[in-house]
Image 1 (cartoon, one colour):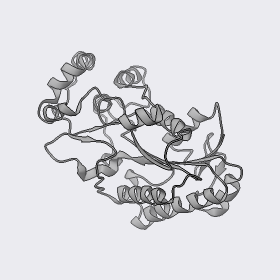
Image 2 (cartoon, rainbow, N blue to C red; image 1 turned 30 degrees about the vertical axis):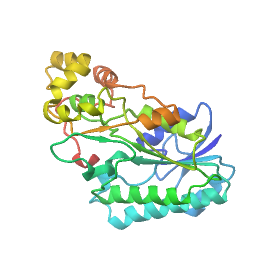
Image 3 (cartoon, rainbow, N blue to C red; image 1 turned 90 degrees about the vertical axis):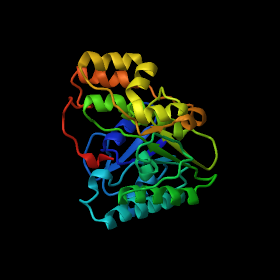
Image 4 (cartoon, one colour; image 1 turned 180 degrees about the horizontal axis):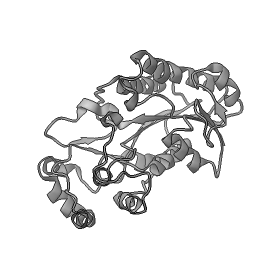
Length: 296
């Protein structure tokens, strides 16, 4: 399969490239130079897109400004790239005879759907309540793709959960309910490429959770006790490292639809975060490291 991949220099784009390259020809497009990028240019430019799309079977669209750009870039740039650029890419892909379109979105657009003081079980039926221009333009792009999807050019939207380096205690706990490894995001995209379902599909990609919907009340009030019951191995690791378990958990992202419809399962769970920390991987930050809180 010949796959055009936008945002191929980004962290998720690189992971997707790595997952697909053994079996597919991947044409990376990005404004920045990297080994995974064949065409250096702006994906919103039709003159960049048209030659790239010739003979392509599929498009995976990951490019665009995201949370750290909020307040740095003007809102109009989010609209231009995330909404207008996505529309242009889809129309040119359709004209070129592309057969599949996969769009990388984010669980962050649920935003205000998470009620303070509660633990919210979130799946694809949960109504998004976006907080920022990043969230609003992602949701707008999703909706225009849903309107345009057809049997000739089906669309898969993948809402990925938190997936960037964070301090190890936070990142390890998040992997239970609201985090995912970039490699699992990539494998989800690979599965979406070959999904033969309806013209449009939307799926949450998040790490495997040990929690049940019935755990939500307890997780909102006494998460450490629930974790000790459900994931004793993680609790033991936290105790050995003198880390504190979270006192409450405010959301659980459920990937059950992706499990059943895409036959996708995440591979890299909380234990991998600790293993990465212990081998000094740049994918995990040391405890106490400061982070940009705009990341989601």
